Image (cartoon, rainbow, N blue to C red; front, side, top):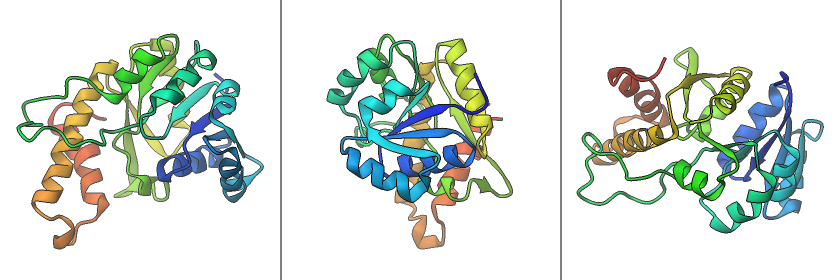
Length: 230
């Protein structure tokens, strides 16, 4: 893998926008994809036309060596991406957007599947990985937390694809951490449910806490307590 490469970011929301910005700042060519190519082109101009190019999702994926899925689950789009992602590294950054069942206990249970595993089922010829699932969008603006890089957990079953993604993230202001196979995404999801649930129950915001409290817990404190993380 070369140090600088063409990377697709599919999605123009807060996560896609932030990821595109840090990739471009690191010297990579960003192919920003959207269902609306004109929207992607407009955002690319805002982010920096020399490094970011806007286009359709399928065109971006077809031209990139690594493809980031930065949008809510969309089976139709995955079907369209299947022919152009064969043999490529595809990184699903999604967390769960649906609430878990009322009796779900994230301290003792994990979900039965994960967005990353479902993506892998629909893109069987791609090398699907998970990363950035618990990276708050604000971190792309201020990636150093308490003076150090925030960990990014990288999950996947293909050794070569994972090595490529780890190398790419090392060019960014984040600390990549290999956390094992794709099934580990279920544990990351359980941590997400635990911390966000505690935040709601104990009204973090009402007590002067902001998004940094959740980031510290998800990426630094809890993973270390469970033997995960750097």
